[in-house]
Length: 137
Image (cartoon, rainbow, N blue to C red; front, side):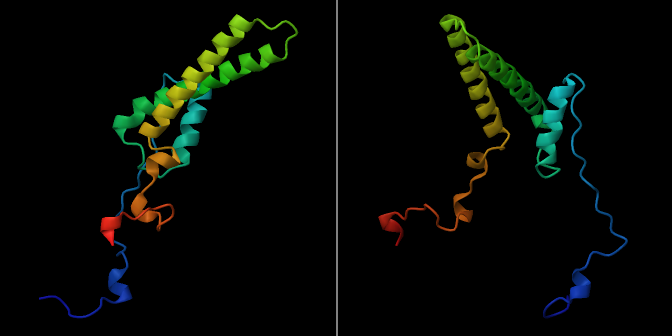
């Protein structure tokens, strides 16, 4: 039979003999470029260390690749917009590429739970925007 009543603060403190294993942040895969690796470390550094399980590493690597590809397309669009003679067909092609990269990034970010929408919990919203159903009185 255990002790009755509240537990003392001293009994709740972790004893010095018990070891807590630190969770390591994942390293960027070798196949990523230096620029893509910077994205990897920025993303993994902005979330808890255990956020990305081993099963998500390939998806995160693809997210890093698409981020850099989207930047490249944006640079090309900027250079096109600054030129005197604008080739509308080429410009349209670049805009389509930008949209495709944006969709890929959005999809991967949601799957990795990087977006606010992906991590939204209605139970924790404290009633903000919550609509009560008439039968839930």
